[in-house]
Length: 297
Image (cartoon, rainbow, N blue to C red; front, side, top):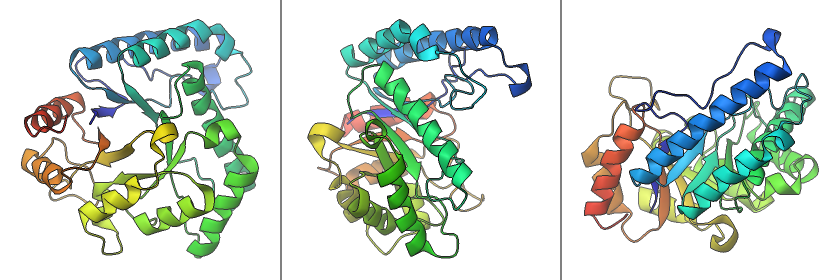
């Protein structure tokens, strides 16, 4: 089992998601910002390797405005060797990488422009993983989208967009995650049947909305959608409910007893866990230590 956290390291004094206002876009500004972002990413990856955190989610903002029409610069060629070196470091240290496009990526939107923009963003993020020369166990995760008053039709629309508009290179990396309001594990399994996409499992979202599946059974059902040779083992997001907050809000720090109980409940099941917990690497280090004492990592 690999354990990790998303995007931001709060120990290091740098950010891999620096950006700027669209109104101040220039190629010089873009190049300078991407250089800073990739230099910081290297520091984060080094920190993670040194501390045994071998699962990491890259920020969507490595290349500002990468999928926006304003950006016509060939940043892929400019930074090709930098991305390749980062990818070599990742592979040499047996890390696993993912990306999670923002909420504006909605493949089943009734708005054609939203769908077009969504596909462009997926192409950008997939190209980052391709430039790093990572295999298809490095994944892009998205949500099912909206129901728009007719979830069966929305699911069908998702599948149609997937089949007709999403490039094969993106399809090879794309996964769908159950959310906390609309798309249950069962809905995602239906999308898997229609598209072949693996299902990323989120335990907190499953607690918020489900079809009655016990946690261990739910993990097993999601894991069955992953073809180990090309997809790797199950990726999942883990968090717990923030006390006194709205349903589905992530806790600030890991509740170690709850994480222990989850690991005990899923004993014998193989997965890589992304901790969606607000204090990032601090909780990830605690989780790793706990998993190691239980023989899971």
